Amino acid sequence: MVKYEDLSRELIRRFPELDFKFRQEIKINDDSDPGPHVVYGDVLAPHLVQLLEEPSNRNQLSKIFSFLEELAVNPDIHVQEVVAQSVLEDVAQRATLLQAARPFMGPRSRQMVREIGELWGIRHAEEFE
Image 1 (cartoon, rainbow, N blue to C red):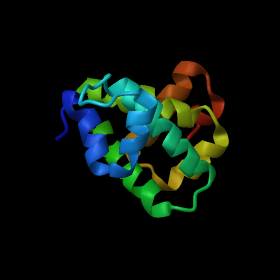
Image 2 (cartoon, rainbow, N blue to C red):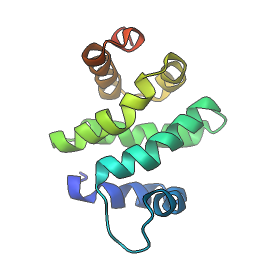
Image 3 (cartoon, rainbow, N blue to C red):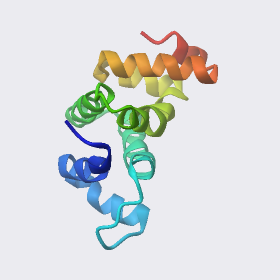
C-alpha cells in the first residue's frame, strides 16, 4: 500500500519515463518533493490527457489507470484526494477524454468521476457509468 508521503516517488518508480518531465515541470534538480498534488497535477495529469487525446498506447493507459485505481481504493483519504482532485478532475472536464478513459477505469475511479460531476455540475461526468 502506497503512503501519502511516498506518492511522488512511487509515481516515478512505476513510470520512470515521467522523471524528466517531473524535473522539468517542477524545476527541481535535487530530491525535494513539492507534494503529491503538485506532482500528480502538473506531471501525471497532462501526460494522461495527452495519451487520451491520442490513445495509441493502450498499454500505457492501462498501466496508469490500474495504478490510479490502486490509489483510489487506498484507505488513506489523502491518497484518494490526490487521484480525484489532481488527476480525475482534469479528465472529467471533457466528455471526449472521459469516454476515451472509460475502458481503462476501475469501479472506484468511475465512482470518483461521478462524484466530481455532482460536485462541479459536470453533466457528462454525473451520468458516467
